[in-house]
Image (cartoon, rainbow, N blue to C red; front, side, top):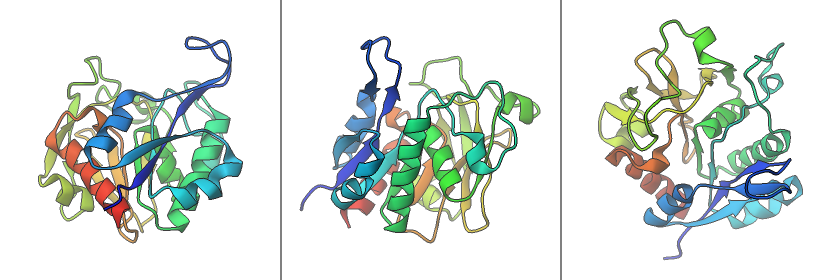
Length: 238
């Protein structure tokens, strides 16, 4: 059986620095490695909006990754922007376009960290712009320990697709975000919540496979992380 082709959105630096003085794309190895281990073929997607229809004709599933930037608050109706918000307008424009296109085709979609936040916005949700200013007694969602370790746990919503994939009610997760999903339309399911009440996962039960998680399962810190990628790739196979 042919292995499904999974499109993975890349990060970018438009002003260069580090790798090159010119603009460049980047992606951590583990984003691609987990797709290979789950039985898929990863392909990195550059931010060229005009290629979106052709890309969607070729890929079988879409993974939206995270990065050190935020979704523009104007895109979810906010009247102001928190001082901590950092934008990458070209990346966000591309990711919104390809995500909306994938959703229209009912293509399997997996959003990770900032990718979950973008998926929520594409589906009509809103975001908390800075957790420390909005959530009393919030956990350290920018965990001080390495990302290869758990920062806290999340409770999975009974009956949700994510809970069925994980096979348990609570899982350990790593945490690297200052924003989070604030609210989603009634058509979506909040499938994971942190002990401080912060939304950590969403899904759309009306679609073949549409899940967003706030943590970074590509680090494979629990069996539930690997199970999520296997389920995603399997959905892209059909």
